[in-house]
Each structure stands twice: as structure tokens, then as C-alpha cells.
Image (tube, rainbow, N blue to C red; front, side):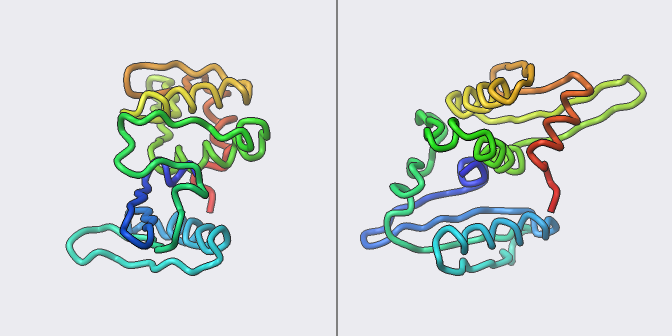
Amino acid sequence: MGVVLGDGYIGRFPRTEVLTILSNSNNEGFINRYAKLVKKIFKKSPSVIKRKSSNCVEIKLYQKEIGRRLGVPFSPREHKEIKIPKWIICNKANLRRYLRGLYEAEGSFCVHKPTCTYKFLFGNRNKSLLRNVYNGLIVLGFHPHKSKDKIQVSRKKEVYAVKNLIKFRQY
């Protein structure tokens, strides 16, 4: 769910829908993980294609009712209200997986030792998605800060704790 909301696209055609997840072609762990998850969830192997004109890989699947089954609105989603489904928010294991996907799509982990600065950031323009991440981190016991277009965790211990808890970029 998280990666679809971050780096994903759901489009509609007259008789089918398309789910596309984009990745940097150098991120083999990400590509393998999400291609396997798409296959597991939809019971169909997605196509994994490197774009010729860029350093991008598409994980793509055509199937009916993708948006309805995931409970995710069609793209673009910048100004749409996105709610965390109850089955995710009521289960901390599912919430961790949801946040992992969002952070792997739109997040970063930064350490600057000379200034003792530690940041675990999530950036997005969708206000409801920012609110979801903020509230999800609070449910998991963290103290995030929010600004106009990002959520950040800055306490050193919490930065490493949330990174490890959601298994950020561990493939």
C-alpha cells in the first residue's frame, strides 16, 4: 500500500486498470521486493521493464478493479484525501509495513556526524498522506515533527529505532 501511494500509479482503461511502481534501476533490492509482493497480492506476475530513455524500472500489472481492491484512488493523488484503511491502522505490524512502503518511496535517512544531525524524513505534497505518516509514527511511539511538505524524526535514538522497526531499505 505504502509504495503504491508513494511511487505508484493506478490508471483506468475501458476494460482494465494498470498498477505501475517506478524505481531507480540501481535499486535491485527494491525492484525484487515489490515485484514479488505484487505477484503475491495479485496472483499474477508483473512485467519488470527498464526504460530505455532513463535510469528507471517499471513494475507493471494490468488487472480489473486494482484501485477498488487496494482502496487507493486513481492517479494523480496530490490533492485527494487518502485514509489509512482500518486493517492497517488497527494492526501495528501492518502499520509498520505501510510506513515502510511510504518511506522507501518518498523517504530518506540522513546522518551528518560533524554536526550531530540525524534525520529520518518523509516528503510529499499530499496533506492527508503527510498526516497519515505523522499519525502512524505517533501510534508506534515516536515524536515526529511536521512542516508543510515533510515529516521528520530527529532524535538520534528514535531515528535509528524507526529505521530499524520498519526495516527501511533492508532487502
